[in-house]
Length: 444
Image 1: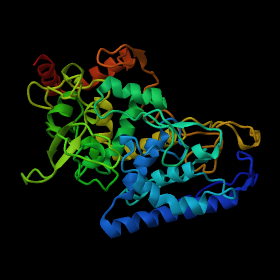
Image 2: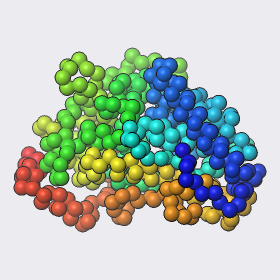
Image 3: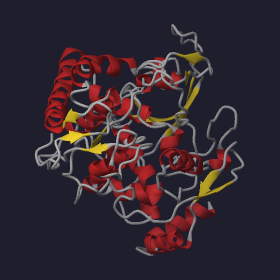
Image 4: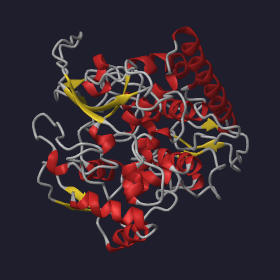
C-alpha cells in the first residue's frame, strides 16, 4: 500500500508515552493492510460477504465524534458492525501494540481505507494509504466514562463505546448539510462526496429496517461513481440532470414483524426503490433513502413529520423540486469518476482524522500532546506538514450559515449565495432546451 513513503529523520515518535520505532510501525501498517486484504478475500470466497463495504461503514460510524476504536453495538444504527469488528480482531491483536504505536482505531481506519482501495476496478487504482496514526482507543483511559444510547454508564470497550448520533436516513437537503457540517466541518461538496460511499454495500432489513439486499447500485461491489448515475442524469444543465435520470418510486416498509435479541423495535421505513434489472419485473429492488435523494431533490415541504413519507414524486407529477444546493455537485461526480474517487480519498482522510490535531510536526510534540496524530505517509501531500485538503476539487470556500428550519429541531445551514446563483445561471444557459425544461418543471 505504501510504496513511496518518506521516512522522517527521527526513527522515534513521542506521540505515545511509550516511544515506538517508525520503521517497525511502517512494516506493521503494510502487514496489517495485507492481512485486511486477505480476510476480505476469505469472507468473499466463503459466503460472498463484502467485508470492504462493512469496513467502510465501521470507519464512518467510529468517525462520528472522532475515531476511538469503540462503537455502541446496542445502538440500532450500529447493528451489523459486529461482523467487521470480529473480522479485524486478530489483526488488531497482532498489530495494535506499544511497539508499533498503532491503536485499534488506527487499524479500523486502515481497514476502511483498504476496503475502498481494493474495491476499485481501474487498471491504475488510486492508493488509499493510512496517513496518520495515534488515534486513542476509548478504553485506553481508565478514567473515561462511556454512556450508551439509553444514557446508561457502561464499560468503555470496543463494543460499548460512547453513544454517537448517526445521521437519520430521512434528512432533507438542508438537514443533511447541517449534520455533516456540524459533525465533520464538511462543505456541501464534501457532503456530496462522502454520501457516494453508498455505491458499495447493502442494507439488511433486520439491522436497519431497509430491505436493500442488492444495495444502492447495480454493482454494489465496485467502488465507482455509479451511485450518482442512479440519481442524476447525464448532461450539462438542470433540465438534463432531471429528465435523464432513472426514475424512482416511493414505498414504506413495514417492520412490525422484526424481532432481535436486543429487544429493540425497528421502525417502519420510507424508502425510494426501483428494479435492479429494468428487463425483469421480478428483479430485486435497489434502494435510496431520503437522505440519499436529498442530494438531488428538495422535498422539505412534502415530507410528513411523523412517518417521514415524502408525498412528491421523483420524476412524475407532483414532482419534487430539484435540489439547487447540491444537485450540480452530484452531477460533477456523475460525469467524472476519477474526480470523485480523488475527492473521496481527500474527504475520507479528513473524516477519519476528525477530532485530532494533524498540524503538529513530530519534532514539536511532547508526551503531553493532546489529540495529536503522527503523519507516517506523505505520498498524498507535498510536505510532511501538509494535511489532506478539507476543500476538494472545485469546492466553494463559502461555509453554510446556521438558520432555523421549520421541520427540524436544530438549526440547519443555508447555502444559497450569489456565487451559487451565478453558477446555476451558467448551467441553465447551456442550451435552450434545458432552460425551457427547467422553467416548465419549476412552473409545473
